[in-house]
Length: 452
Image (cartoon, rainbow, N blue to C red; front, side, top):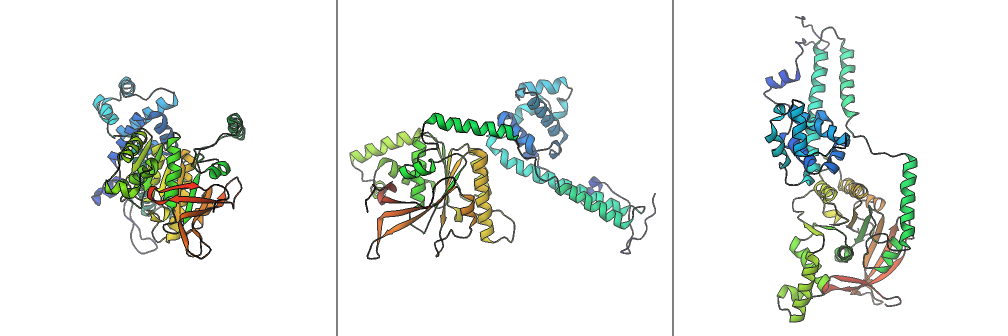
């Protein structure tokens, strides 16, 4: 046994110990989540094409604490790399042939894993938990290795310090995932394909229609992977304009997700029904509808029910929850109403401006990754600038400022609005259109040219 000797702080070193021994003394297990590990494997079984591609890019095998789960994950990777279908029966047979089936709990374990989560859309949620636990284990192991260096009387103190720093830097340097890449040749080919696709359309709209001819003409409609911000003061009509754009896209075949932080699902749905059917909001709330209005509403209900729209419950949801849900939702258009109402789980001590800037960047990032067009709104401050963060304007592809129409006598006409384009990535900006507003049905339409 090595004889402990005093270090430079006057304390005596003791025998080195393993991670498990130290944790056992502290009566603490290594951090892990069996639910997250099984959840990831279940998502990969249910949606192997998409989820295994994501998993291979971001989840190392060592992230699974249980050997049984690591064994199954290795088998999934082997199937994925060989272009074999990841099917419960085929995986079970492969594990049996390799003498590994009993180690993972038998065929029942694979069957149970397939139904462990109700939907593979939970993948992002489980991945975060899994990687957080893995990172915590790596930190603990690095600290224990560092402590063992200090405990070793044959290691100089400064050498022990340098080794400890190297252990921690090794963890920090590998926290990120390898990013997707393509050669410039492949990028050029992809770009040429897009150019040829536009030529074949012969001037047809690139994205989904908004219902506003000038916006469609100058912005190309609601294009994939972009973020459009409607900014204004309270009650200027930001939510209604976004709703109008999304409803037109919905009728054109888009799958739309509504994330309303300002009102409950039933109120948002009522507004959509009013706009779509043309039935006055007050009449709809009173229930005193004529036969014609009943027919209009019934027709609208049938049409909307057959279209691809989801009304998402955002109660208690953080900004990160909403962004993750957009990423897994498969939406062509997502309405987030609105930015300043989103609460972030960002770093402690950050200012509100920093948090909103972070949310803005994440919205842009998820739009690029998924191809979803995100419609969101922002408040203006008293100076007429985007409130709380200039990053909103930097991240957005299009920014529109909506304001009430002011008459010559200084009064405001609630039936009219001005819509100024402040940013239009890749196109002309600083143009303006006049809008007419029908308050009872929450409907905007572009005013005919020359109408005041």
